Length: 590
Image 1 (spheres, rainbow, N blue to C red):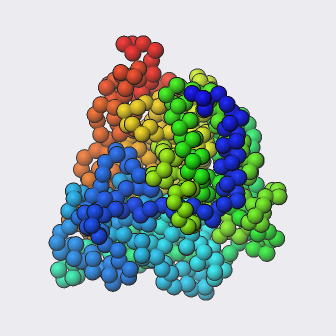
Image 2: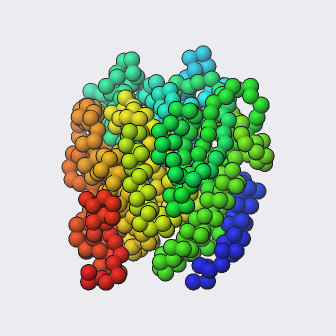
Image 3: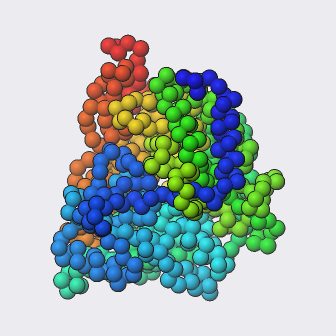
């Protein structure tokens, strides 16, 4: 309990952590490979970068293959197809939270794109760049910059691979141009799928908007069920610079500002701190490439962190949960958000120091970051904050898009919950609040279907799956309001199981996607139990058992789905009465 009552202690810990990240960005232990094998490349298991899937299951396969060329990839797919083996693709860092990397049973094959990480061709005249699917976002934008080109929009974390971004529909924030989704700046996809005997058991297809529009729009967001993406060609733009500044305001007229800021600023986003009643506005615009400035965005939470400090912070959060210390959470959340804001979130005007807004820098230096990956081994003295080998961050992530026309109403619903208990969402603010990004309609069959705001909520997850969370009913209600009242679309690479129950019915082009899937892989060799569930082919994404609602495996329909022995019962929502959430009641017999 000692940690709860000394905010000065936390200022010291957080200050040391921030100082470390500012000075020692080249030191860290990079993440380990998400695939582990008992012997060589046999008897293998895969996990995500956080070390645990939403249902805490273990995903296994008999073997893993590491192709280094397209020819090797074709040979691997052909051999597995001939043997009728299940296959799934794994990536270098495995950042998808759901079980997209899992194959069925224990006899399948993992195919890693770790060494398919080369640039194939840069065509400056055509402004295109062709890369293999294992190339990371960081490599992609670096290679483009070498020839004076830029990818206009991308996620904020550069540890994603090209294949992974296309597999899950990864995006940045913008209403401009074709929108913020990476896949909408792809001009050609080469994919290797199971083939017939006449094909030699593997078929290589080259897809584009002009030659194969139906298949192309299926492959742009594919969930990995069409085969292995081998190469991707991006249509890029001439290099440009960005001018960025952050402004913190109260959230009184926030619901109106959301509707217009995306039209005024090309790269606008928001960080909403609802319990504090504040919003951080990102005023981010494109400027000419010859504008003075050499700014760099090295986001502080994505830098190397001291493992000892991370362990202390996690221990404190666990104690706050045990003792239901909402005040402590709110105090620390205010400290963290104010420290990040005053530190300009890691922005510097010259790559070294922050001297004031606006920060102006080239697109490749301002759009994305993740320096904890770019590091030497230091024996886990430092690491990415969520590295599962240390006692660090361990969280749920709920991410969904609400149509822009309904965002104001959704924000009002969240504010109504805050009025019931001002401290209820401080837990979100410990993880930098609610990140809100703009997305637009995409021709991809499993992409977004309208202009929308993507809400990203990150919050505490207990190591024990049967341990309830402080104010978990508030976050569960927000999740259900989004998914059911506003028919929100979940992010394919994030979320808990409940977000995907019946999700395919929300996509008007689902049948077109499934027809392509049937054509490419009629035996479902690249499908899994999980992909069959989320695509509505067989089974449900939810898992109903005692305690299932605590981890988002189900929506509670009876008290046993919560934690009745700990006083958490299944109750209606406070604002959205149709919701069913795990609520702590004073009398456990109520």
